[in-house]
Image (tube, rainbow, N blue to C red; front, side, top):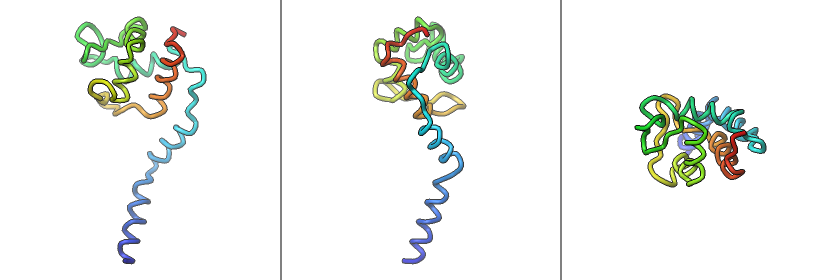
Length: 120
């Protein structure tokens, strides 16, 4: 029984890595009140999604072209932007090299869409 307790405690310590603690801090400090496309989402989408051979141009994967605001707005309005990011519509595909978007990044995108997806 004691070995089991020690192993569980060790597992708990390993699971709470520096990255996990930083992710938790990031989520606690996630401000979605005034998210803007030009201020942060454009860079986020460009760096994480609108990459060659992914979601850019006429041959964008899944037909999700995130090249311009107009493209992003159309996808946001039809529900595919948040749906695809959350994995509730279509296939959830993590961006190459950067992994799945953080909960905070997804919350910011969702808040922006819910607020009307303005070109602000």
